Image 1 (tube, rainbow, N blue to C red):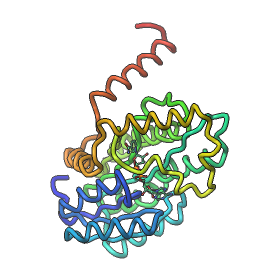
Image 2 (image 1 turned 180 degrees about the vertical axis):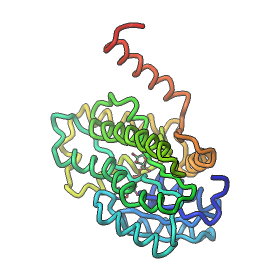
Image 3 (image 1 turned 90 degrees about the horizontal axis):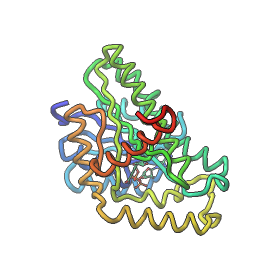
Image 4 (image 1 turned 60 degrees about the vertical axis):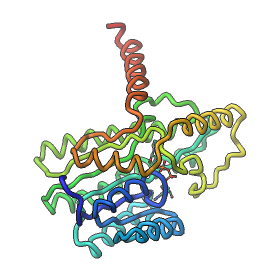
Length: 278
Ligand SMILES: NC(=O)c1ccc[n+]([C@@H]2O[C@H](COP(=O)([O-])OP(=O)(O)OC[C@H]3O[C@@H](n4cnc5c(N)ncnc54)[C@H](O)[C@@H]3O)[C@@H](O)[C@H]2O)c1
């Protein structure tokens, strides 16, 4: 996709962090951006910020965990814009806990947002993208956590992100086999400034940090410190994502050299443990 001017882009989880950074970068390129998020107030503030720099934005309060809500988002976009060119399934949440203390509800929450949110976006928008038969792209935000997977205290998060990478690869292969002009990009933010560590603000079941053990608290603090060290701003990363989409790349990443080493080590560990040394 050479130019984003007047293209219609839908971004979920757009009120904060990575989603807002992507929305800003797209707006700067002249795209019509539809911001979708479960947090109505934050959505309003994000839209005002973009409008202040002269962009045309629309907002729709959407819960990606709810298929009907995502269907309403699609209907809103089609009624307002008449088409859609870029779909960013970006909303995500994280929990920190030992698996022994992680409740079914926490599992359901993380899976319903991080995995089913992506599925709901694809189910709602893909038939429209296929019908339009013009170049378009589905962009799913996963995480290096989905490639590293062995993340203590973050099992639901890592599992959901591994699933998003997997389903995106399957979808890309299917679309290619169909000869459809719909591309797929997976976003792997490494350390990008955001409010992901305050995800509990959106936990409808209200499972609270009070049940965290000391080890989990320490781990969480460590992750926070590591994140802060050489984090990219969401605006910087938004530009990287837009560049990757322009180049029709299958992945958009941050901190590539670091994660390349970590992912390669994990893959080698599995290959050796499962199939023996090469
Ligand atoms: N920040 C990072 O370094 C990093 C690293 C790896 C992956 N990610 C991924 O990036 C994506 C964005 O996260 P972020 O880091 O910007 O965090 P964030 O908390 O700043 O933004 C997430 C947004 O998603 C929204 N959201 C939460 N539940 C929702 C729901 N049910 N429906 C609709 N919107 C919902 C939140 O209100 C928030 O605006 C997530 O998928 C996250 O897993 C981020």
